[in-house]
Image (cartoon, rainbow, N blue to C red; front, side, top):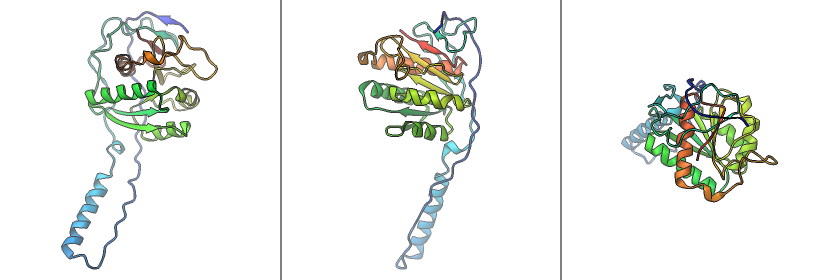
Length: 248
């Protein structure tokens, strides 16, 4: 895979249209012994419940944007070829933040320590940045989990867990309007809607394929995983998609 030094590139990620999802069915049972006041209170609670079930993600919202700009040495110039590996300068992504309310789905598979470390890093990042985060655990049905995550119409799906690599390689080329970020692994031959962040010890590319380094669970430190989600999101928000970011 080709490697590039870093300088400058501009662009914007693709955005999927929003689609409303129906509210869940609400069922109540009223008994004759209930007073009129009780019935009215129950009816009011039902109305409020129905109003509240209009999921915030069912409504349109502004396309997320980058707040702040990457530091020197983050973005490459000239534009790298598709699927290239780029090596941003350490910390050059630190001043890039998502606009408030960015909708992100954390897609996980596996209960191994590296996957848990990645998931924890994403959760901390979302809390720090005011990101609207939801989680889909795909254990037992990897492709179904990916489909469920896409059905939420998020701005970004963040994948954590080596088990998801092969299913993502199959699904993502058929859904180019959905942005994916794979942290701690990568898919072979990514389309422009899939960005990955790797480092020495984390470069799984799918079953039967060699990685750029030997897998090392100990490399999934909180600091490294935190850098991975921040660098990856900075890349997506600034249009550096479809590449592998290799961080130190």
